[in-house]
Length: 101
Image (cartoon, rainbow, N blue to C red; front, side, top):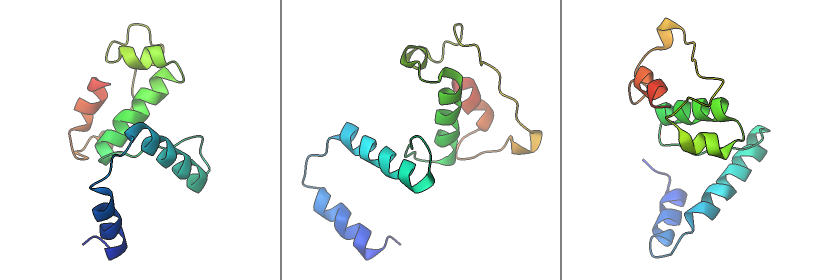
């Protein structure tokens, strides 16, 4: 169940325009403050979080490299080492997520 406070916030927002870029930027800022990190990213699942993390690790701050994915011909960090026991389904097949990046 969703707590009443959250359900009320969602209900109030349904009839309004939301600038998604601004919402994501604010969420990133709040996550960064809460965790002490440089930035944060809201994802739909563990699998998508792993995929985003891998892409960020591979491309760093180079937006051009990120936009070129899944082409990794210009990426120097292009291998993933993962323990066999971690190759499981986190909402989707982790091997598939790694290959997509």
